[in-house]
Image (cartoon, rainbow, N blue to C red; front, top):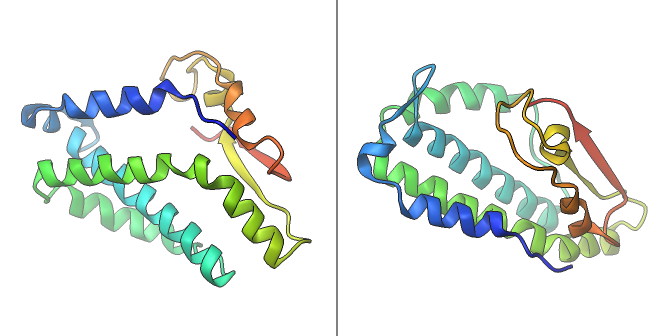
Amino acid sequence: MTIDDTDFQHNADSTRRLRDEDLGISLGGGWTVAVALAHLGFWDTRQVATLRHYVETDVLLGGASDNAVNAVLERLAVLADPRPVAQLGVSAAAAFDAFPAAWPDLYDAVKEASPETEVGTGFQFEFLRGGGFLSGEIHEPRWELLDRFDGSIDFIAVSSYP
């Protein structure tokens, strides 16, 4: 699988340009840019840890506690120093961006340990289709993202949740 994705570079360039005053910009609902980056950083880090845990133990983490964790995270993120919190978001995103490149090895490891296990991933439909009706983020269709998993995926889940 080859990855030719200018989004990774665009994200890296954008985050390098963040100034301290940018981190305090309100996004509404009590969220600032720094809080949003903390939120993304936490959940990206959680996903990477969950995938590593699964590969090492064959036990999938997760469940109902995620909603409670999210509520606590939202309260704590507003109290943190914005610059380190923003850096957490950026570094966690970089680690999570490596996920597609690691996919074939993850797929092979699961199949080796349990050949009958179906291995797949999920996508948000509007992100693939393009547009922005639900998310409010207008962009071009991204169907080529599915090609990253060619030959090493048993199913694809598609969500309409923004």
